[in-house]
Length: 151
Image 1 (cartoon, rainbow, N blue to C red):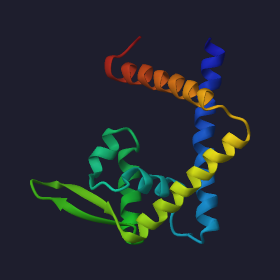
Image 2: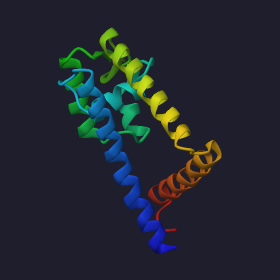
Image 3: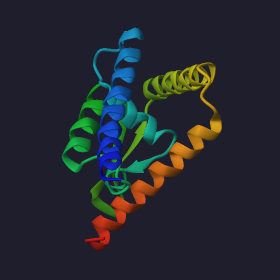
Image 4: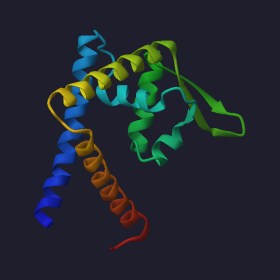
């Protein structure tokens, strides 16, 4: 089991990097040079919500310093609007601009094309559900370790 576990963790890391490469390639195809795959993914995760930056970090999507840097860049390039939260002036709420919503729609189109390509390659939806279930269990195991310590 240990060897399979280690192989799985390495694969997860490679898959994440490869997905960011896919996003970067799509951004290049669209002629978007000012942002990277991580920033495009950040926009997609914000979606139609107005969200406090701290919530992105707490959900486990991003590291604190990285999210602050990426939010600043996305504001500078006109993809995000930000404002201080009324009741807690230390918190900042962000939302997508029209420019970002257009990009997120294109990222969603890319995801639909990728899903269709997987289906054309013969990947069964049941296989995808099983992989998802396994990865969720791994995520829960890691979250429990972080919260409660040794297994």
